[in-house]
Amino acid sequence: MRKTSVLLLLLAFAAPMAWAQNLSYKYFLVPIALPVQGIPGANGSVWTSHFLLRNDASESVSVIGFDIGCGGISLCPPPRPIPPGLTFAPLFIAFPPLYMTWLGVDERFVEQVSLSLRVQDVTRQGGHFGTRVPVVPESEFRTTIYLTGVPTTSAYRSLVRIYGVTGGRFRLRYYAIDSTKPYTNPPVGADRVLGTSDYEFDENSPPYSFALAVGVPEFGEPLVAITVEALDGEKIWAFASVTHNETQNVTIVAP
Image (tube, rainbow, N blue to C red):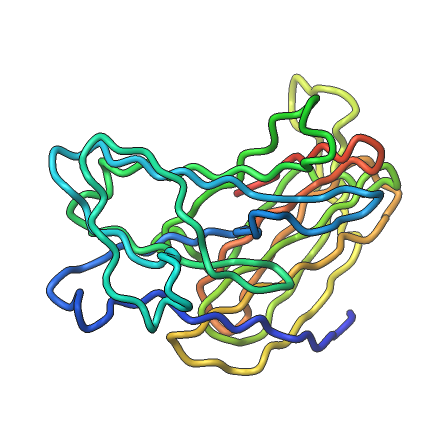
């Protein structure tokens, strides 16, 4: 069992400010919010993200957490509410290495607001529109995340991306799975454990958040299942990004 210390990415939680204390917000994790100009990746790739928000409510909706161009969320006046029937592309203040952030939506209108996020290698955009990435409500965070069908061969770069609000201890466990043929009945016995990795974070108190990317080892198995467990009861969310080394096409393996 391997224990590793990692550097946390601390981000300001987009909590309601004084001007919005009369409203209650539901918060959504935006796992990847890359700068407009993109960031360089492996094999000459340049990655950017595209976020769209649409208000289908019959009235304007308050949304907080995006950049309105005044130098920082904590210094900004309140953004204008989003008019009904409008789709727009907000910008975010997010920092390396993982560029995560949070978005708050007036909880009365959550069902009428659509959030869409995709990432794209702009050097190959002629042949690929990009990959959809989940935008996750904080209410879906849990203590254990299950990811099934992640490749571990040399043709791919697989990363498990873990997100949470406070620190603690976390364990990744990898299982070999037989995906070569279908079964009329399930085989006897459990999946074989390939290995575990432990990670320990310094304690952080809200309103801060952390994000961590863990490279999946090359076990030589075509596909593995992964569990991500918070050992101290922390609520987390995670997904695996799988990038083909030649085409740079990305596949998301989510819970």
